[in-house]
Length: 402
Image 1 (cartoon, one colour):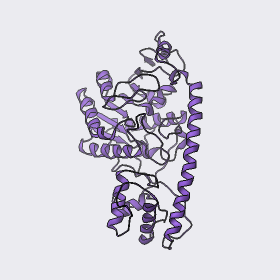
Image 2: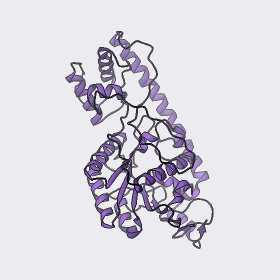
Image 3: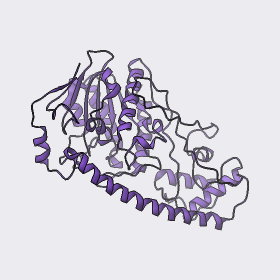
Image 4: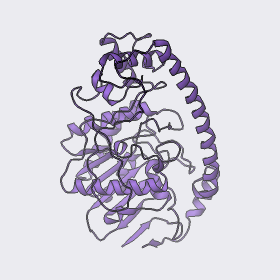
């Protein structure tokens, strides 16, 4: 059994950029492929393939990759092929199942075409199933593509479109709910909430391996609905506008109407709705229970199921299908049916905004420190190195890693 690449930079450390990693597991379980952006590239950067070694696989993951439209310039100094272009490049190497971990750099107006292009291209090479990992969009996610064409709202839209497309595909496209599976596991990610830390690499390879086993055994792993992301002041987009419209329909005054911006007025309106409902926690944030009650998520009569954060032990285990995400919030210390003056709610909102500003500044400082540490510890993938430096680093004799 061996791991090979077109040009591996030595026998230790990460495989160089712009390469496909191929692993021969002697056909123990199945023949699969994985294509992704920088959220999957951590597997390559840390050269940790974990439970994936149970499969024959081809893996191609690049920074700043987009799914269909032209990719942006990566931290490694070049513009990578898109997911669709990479599918055609791999061709017959795609195997029985293609795993896609992409979308974080995609403009919102390309989502539908991107999903269709990927599935159509995969069918061309007789792939049996495409498994697409959901995009993380929770409160711990602070990422946009370099050209700022994507955001957490885009990621939520992507998840919704993926699940709709999967339902219409007859099982060909399946959605693996990585977003729900990784909820609460902050140590799996870097400061932006999407790129993998070393423990996150272990987690994602274990997760994907388990999903692949289930799909190859004939299961459909797609969830019934995209995970709900808690809405708090500062959130924007369609989900906010739908929530505001539902509040208005419920007889709650929302100053400014359904403008898609979650400000202090919207927070006060949500708190008022929660008080009137009587069985909701009064927080001013739209958690899953409130979203269901408003009818903007799932069936309002269903009780939300909590998400269990799994172990990261690197064993090949088939994880249970994750339930839609429930984001837990601490008790406000006030009974749900009690009356809180609107002024108090607004004051709390202003305090929350101030705390948010402090946290944002802290995140910026931490980000800059981590970027400097990254440049020191990952020189081959640091933007401080030129394209020529990167190419010279990979101009060595091909080798094998057992």
